[in-house]
Image (tube, rainbow, N blue to C red; front, side):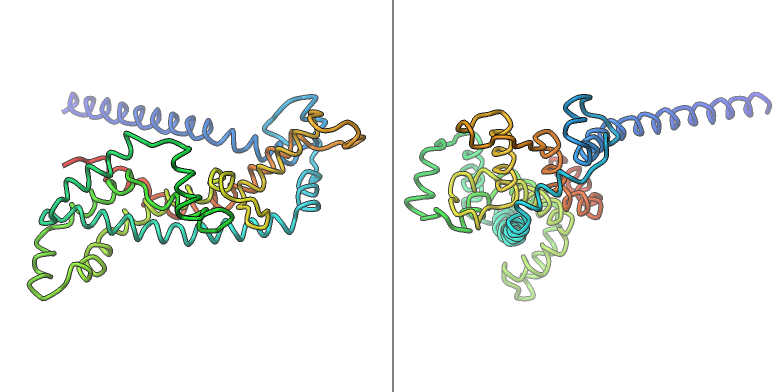
Length: 303
């Protein structure tokens, strides 16, 4: 009996040490991941001269709101308008992308669909081979007439083959008997899609939806390619322009005398722009993190 108790004590001690190590390791990784974000936030509230002199730190140096005052004083209304544009294209683009992606995923998950493997192969082919930037730009401008249009900020990013295959994995996990029972009751494939497949794939919808939302929120490339009207600039591209202008003035890459005696917060404005752009995503992500992790894990399982 005494040996058994000693053995159990050793096992309990071993389990405790393993758990302690696991928690400490996870805490360390969390701190490592969180530190850059803390530094970005700290520098954005620091004085630009202090940052230039002493470098970046996790605590604000000579705490000030001058950088944010500079951004919103010179471009406050335009930043607000860019926020509205970005929110609009993110909501509309995510909804449209989810509709297109889920429909194609559901279709090729049906084994009775004729040429389903051919469709899947064609989609996969586009990941491996691409025509390149110039043909893509020519098609978008001359065929679809996307120049200076809000559609140009939505349409080019509407479909992702990787997300399509991820959603197909979910739809294939739905028991075929449910589809067959619905067909016997007279349901069409549209009814099966809306009333059975989608409700049973909420995790996939949230996972893929987050990916599309992040894609639209962070996109500036489409605006660079197609948008000339400043009133249609999304947030990322508008702040990118501000940052480029500040860097150009600070580095002297402008005509002589055009910016005489101008002192701009070139270092802290980079971090303030980052805080402004990632703020909404940081607040949104914790609410759907669980579904995102579940979606990635399920999508990693191959049949």
